[in-house]
Image 1 (tube, rainbow, N blue to C red):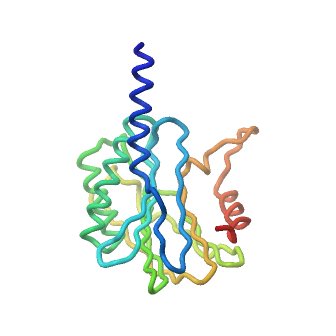
Image 2 (cartoon, rainbow, N blue to C red):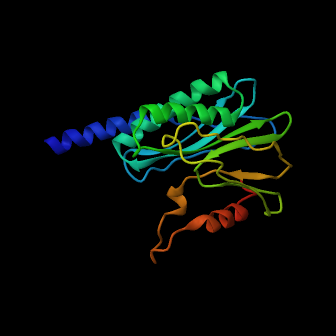
Length: 214
């Protein structure tokens, strides 16, 4: 009976967590946008989101809370709420990440941390600016499948150190046919039958082979 109750509670928590993810991708003229999360267990600490950033522009984020289960899923919901609130008042993605780090460092513990990449897209100027806190580097491919940019980390994961700067990148001009991919280490660290990890290079190759798909 206890096992059944625990299972019912996990199912309820899973349903709540699913409601935190975007119901649909934003419709932006000139852009094709999509996102998905496939948790390995009932609850997970990975999340992605789309939202408006202060001053205009589309915010896109992918993050990964250390660990699995109930604790990371709660921290994931907490970080999501703080991020959305900060984005309403602050336009600079680096400053948003910096302020989020201060909040999570004060409220969390040294065993709880979050890797985070935050991107701001200006649809009119066709530019992308990002800040990356210890997260796997996003990739930007051109229309021919060549690697144009790696959106690399500019600081440690969030929730560990206070008084850390997370500088925003320069504005990257997006050309027709460019393809941006953001992901978590749930993909790169996934093991195959031979126990080898999927790895970042396979992510790039996969993106290249599907870059013309919707």
